[in-house]
Image (cartoon, rainbow, N blue to C red):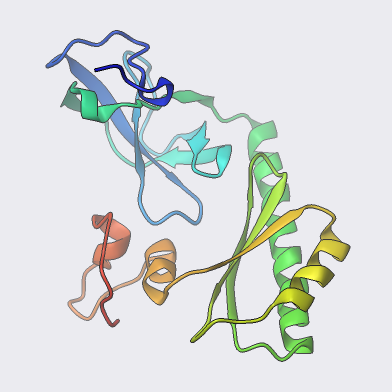
Length: 196
């Protein structure tokens, strides 16, 4: 069976071959992601430049290297591009301030149009070409006027994405009633509709 390009074994690993991985966590993400490091000497807590689901961005290593036996369902294997430079970190901070600026703008517009929605956070994706506004709402919202105003102000592609309370809890983390870290922000990758 031929693998799709995105799942190609470009390193020609053999089944059962032991690979070294670390986990990288990105700002605003619920869980850390596995990255192949091979013989690279990355350290726990080190800031690195790697591909998240939002594009190339700065994250930090939040695990020690651990061994994994290669099998095809690991594909595609992600790698860390390099250690983050001062320039990368500075750019990340500038992006964060821009996200906060757009968050304030959007909250003011939500108030202006008296919409029953709660903006949770704002993210740049696709290397800064698109802005995603995440919100929680009890029902479907007609936000056409809001989108028009946002596009007029921001002059970038925008998307408004409704998320669940659990998605937001997973992203910001917290302590559950059991006294431990929330399951959805520590180890659960998928979860059903469960009241918080």
